[in-house]
Length: 68
Image (cartoon, rainbow, N blue to C red; front, side, top):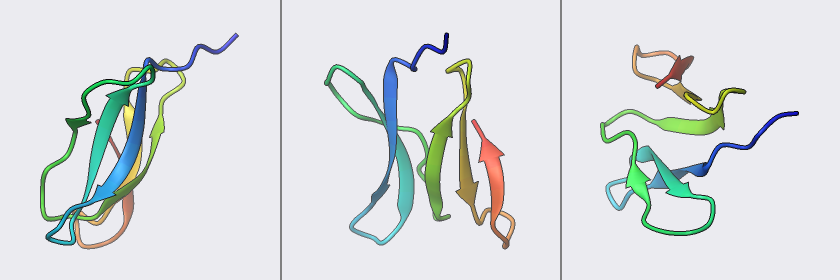
């Protein structure tokens, strides 16, 4: 049986037009910024064990999958 991570993740477009990743407790609470850079980070997905987030980013000049 898979257990959902205790956090939700989402891409937020900042006022500057950047796309950063944020997490927030699934039951509600304070959001926490995960990425804070000039790259476009989007489509976050939790790993099956709930320890890492995989996402697309253009950090190298081309779109690739990254994990944190």
